[in-house]
Amino acid sequence: MIEVKNLCKSYGDKLAVDNISFEAHNGEILGFLGPNGAGKSTTMNILTGYLSSTSGEAYINGKEILEEPLLAKKEIGYLPEFPPLYLDMTVKEYLNFMYELKGCKIPKNTHLQEICELVKIEEVYNRLIKNLSKGYKQRVGLAQALVGNPNVLILDEPTVGLDPKQIIEIRTLIKKLGKNHTVILSSHILSEVQAVCDRIVIINNGKIIADDTADNLSNTLTADHKLVARIDGPREEVIKVISSIPGVVSVLADMQREKGVWEYNIEAVEGTDIRRELNKRLSARNWYIMGLRPSELTLEDIFLRLTMGESVDEFMNQKAESMDVKSLNSHGEAKKA
Image (cartoon, rainbow, N blue to C red; front, side, top):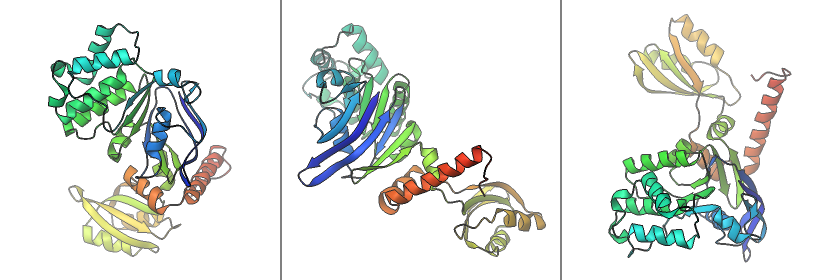
């Protein structure tokens, strides 16, 4: 539904968007992330037709945004970070105005009523927008994006300024909308992106440095030598025993998860697999491993690592190596250690 090919945008000598390509499919919620100045807002403005690109192409439901701007824009519902509201209008007047502005052909009263029920603004329908709370203004902004039932929704910080209950409601709504629309969601609340999005694109310095699901990114970047173990045994003695295993760098007891069972964060020298020795030493003392897993990265860890610590080449090399191993394993030609 959205296809970006070799997109570039220059401001004089500054290359804000550097030859990026990605796709977002129907029924998919795509998280679009990047630090300030990364090129994220520029890309979104190009997709909505607000800015022209220097080179490259952007298709909205098969319509190129520069070659067929009116047809492409009819496919888009856009909620910018600061919704374009006319504060001296009532909600009813504003949505009717947006309906006419978009040249919508759907039966008006029924269509606007369905939108108001969907975003839960029926009770403020006849109130002036300037008198509404920040949360309701955000909902009205989302309502205008839905006028005309566009195939593509581009949402920039849709939950900014909302209280926790409202955030949950908007997240639920976005998930519901994602079943029948293509959604691009930009947010600085990374837990929100992880909870809502099917796939994540991360942009930094004008380049796409990651394009995958949060789980796959975590699996690619998580080091095998960092483990989280849940162990039934005396805490201080368990720490001493694990610390004595060759290759172990550090052991930290997190918290007691159940009676007598603590969770331990274990880091070993990179490339060292301590699992067998760990099991051997604990079993010899009749201590039980109740759970053992890699220390997985959160989306926040991934974002910081890719935008601050991990170079693009390092990440892509890691990903390629991981895919090679998976491919070999699937054919039975090699086994991952």
